[in-house]
Length: 259
Ligand code: BTN
Image 1 (cartoon, rainbow, N blue to C red):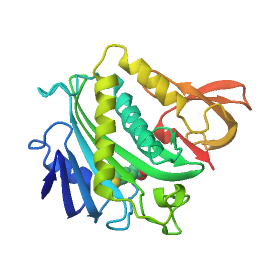
Image 2 (spheres, rainbow, N blue to C red; image 1 turned 90 degrees about the vertical axis):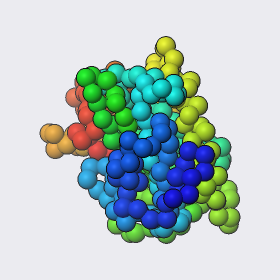
Image 3 (cartoon, rainbow, N blue to C red; image 1 turned 60 degrees about the vertical axis):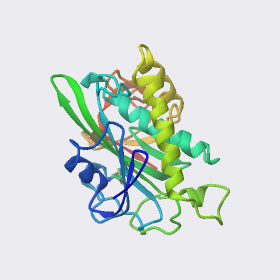
């Protein structure tokens, strides 16, 4: 293992989320485990995450709430969506600093136009109604330019930015992300009133907010036209069903977008 600042770089592991989980007791708060190659990268909804070795960022950030380092305050379990918000906004800012305009497809996919550039898998552990730890796994497509045709709509920084011919160095890119993400922790997660400011920022960066789009209600197995209007306190998606003229709330596995 090579350690630079609080980032551990591994040549190969099964999944950085798994690696972080196995070593959580010995990892410092806000330390990062990154791998050039994952053999069993995991995605949301039980999917796998594939990434050409050495071309993209695949890493996990460990958060320990109320840790003595003071960098991450205690967080109530009902406020856990704030972790998604901070991670997604930090990726959007990272991309913006590389001249790529990205938006957040709720809850925490990052899109450039209608293509996915980054996926986030957050695994929380909760104790007595409070957050104990989170493992924030992030897969950001950086230099990869060809993708498995089975993936619906992938893109990468190389395909989206202006620096098409140059390869982007992974190590400084991850350091930049960590710097930006720590800024979010300090400015929003640790401060009274920070969570509502974080929510406003998240809403301002949401993909297709207020835009008429087709969705599938996965509980009713019904396709409908609607508009994202906002989020509930705990981060459920509020969609106006324009066909029925009513507002509906959805949890993550209850709605899919038709792109
Ligand atoms: C998604 O399905 O969109 C979430 C993808 C998350 C992938 C990252 S890559 C680093 C970390 N380790 C994993 O096994 N998964 C996450």
